[in-house]
Image (cartoon, rainbow, N blue to C red):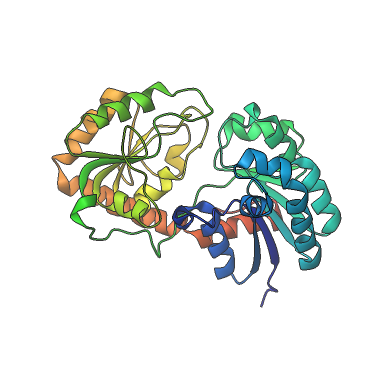
Length: 339
């Protein structure tokens, strides 16, 4: 039997929020544990806020960074990790990574950046440059940013799903609708994607469409996020950037994983993940989205067939154990074997 690895994960687990149930970081921990490894988690932002004498993240970064890093380094040093995974590169700076490397000289350091446009955030790239490996749910120019920063190995690792809590189920009437979207119409720090904004704005004026987190729609928390997806006949998946090879948000995996028919904005490389017309449908324009939505709302059998195939594909290939294994294979062999 293979010896269990000690894996130290630094992330923003948002432990104080019900939304933490929905998060990718939670799924990665679960996948690694199910593979038989030991995981020690350090929620950087929560610790930062605990040590800060003042509220607010910006103030906490100024007043509590030293104590937070001291706590982090003590845990890293005495855990003797085989692997350190940093999944909050906007909080952990390059100097902190260097200090962790001194505290855990034999560990492999891997950074995960789930956000787009890393080139706009030099501190994130500087943190990534201190890693042995950087993984992203994208390839193309986003991943190239880290290659250009001389990271020894950069790789595409998709978002995960958790079939234990993400599957098609009967939900209360309040969740039921024709079309749903979870998220914001605009990114708070990035330029507007016009197709995304225009589709969501039009949906806000469409009868029997429900929006969560934008245009007056309340946000969802915890398992309610999945209930909101399950209750819809169609889920919209569209990124803030739709021209970068394989780039996707967690929406792209969460919707099919919940057994809901997915209409996704076409992005280069997506056919490698889900086949158009088999597991979901892709659209290229705003008008095409509404044309496809109208057709599939009138053809229940076709919509449900594709939704079922999409859920089976997501559960089989993108479950948290499979993606955790791909990540470990990448660390151990330099590559991973995906279908």
